[in-house]
Length: 105
View 1 (tube, helix red, strand yellow):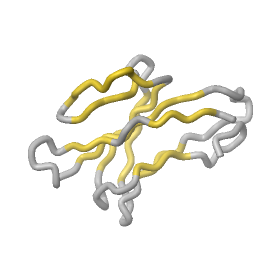
View 2 (spheres, one colour):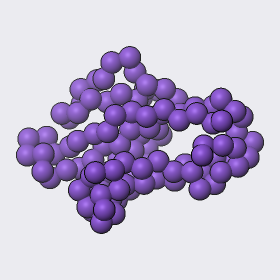
View 3 (cartoon, one colour):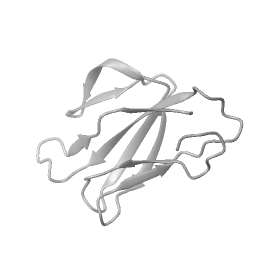
């Protein structure tokens, strides 16, 4: 659960190619419409953007840790989206998840 004092909280993007390189964007919110970039729609708000990378495991799950400190107040939220380098996409080489929003409860 995304609750204060949860150092093990993380976000997972599934169904990616095993070993795929992923770029995560974390932001305070989402855009009202997706912005097309390198063949995918970006839905996270680029203002205050934080990025992280990960590698998908053998099952195609790419995870990043987002530890929630004990002093984080209830109601704080962030949004995340995963961009995947996917060689199966012959034209653009990238796929992306939808943006998800997470709220501390």
